[in-house]
Image (cartoon, rainbow, N blue to C red; front, side, top):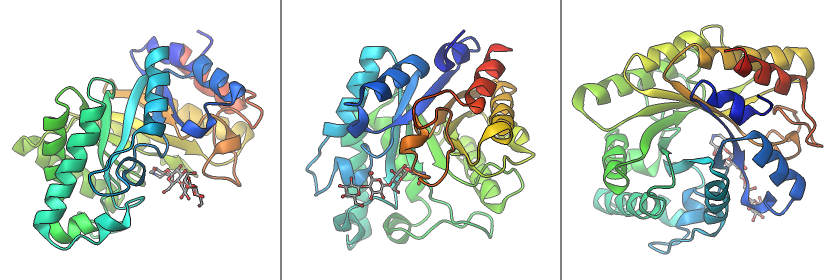
Length: 305
Ligand code: G3I
């Protein structure tokens, strides 16, 4: 099969890309997107600052453009993200009481997940809530954590389940790719606890912004999957170029294919031209939409199964 989405589909998986609404007017960008990818994640358009810039005034222009394109092309949509400390408008950060934060968070989730009900197959319900480093289980400071305590995460998942009972609900984070990292262990313990107590969680998103791919990456994916959740590689990009980059992409692809519950891979962009890692070339298509060694490594690995 000659494209990433089709090749991944042979194993029942999707192969997606983060998409920026502002690029959908560029013919070459759209052509590459449509040719290669079977899923999209809005890179910024579903974040709080875009969808609810002022209280209870929702705006879906950019996100709707991406979702409408995806629906028209039969692509899956990952929703990114409902609750995150970053790209969070000042009015949310300045809320005074737990009661207010809770009602604002619930209202945001109900509106945004409700708007995309039936169109988004998986939501990053909470993004990047864990602190970097240890001790295991430490959450990052945010208005949600400060006012609601660590229970804000499970509150958000319960609200998301009500808002869209058909969507897979994911916890998404970076630097949880190495099984031995304290941050990974904190997320692992949370997922195990949620599954034990019946808190609705269906998937873990490993962002996978890599320099080096951890040696135990496949083991890490398998360990999360063994808790009874799907694993999705949600924001993949790998520093570098040439053979070393291709080898790294091949190992990531193999790791996902080796675990039945690793259900799909998303690269964090379509082309190096628009990568958030502006001084690097971390994606599969170069700045002219040419296929890189890394692209062929991924395609061949997907086709080899
Ligand atoms: O759209 C505004 C524009 O109006 C303004 O004039 C300009 C001035 O700075 O900023 C533009 O917004 C930028 C936005 O991207 C859209 O291009 C923001 O400054 C910039 O901060 C923002 O960066 C995004 C970043 O998240 C913000 O945290 C990146 O595009 C996006 O790739 C990145 O994605 C994150 C994931 O959501 C979560 N995981 C990590 C990943 C990489 O950082």
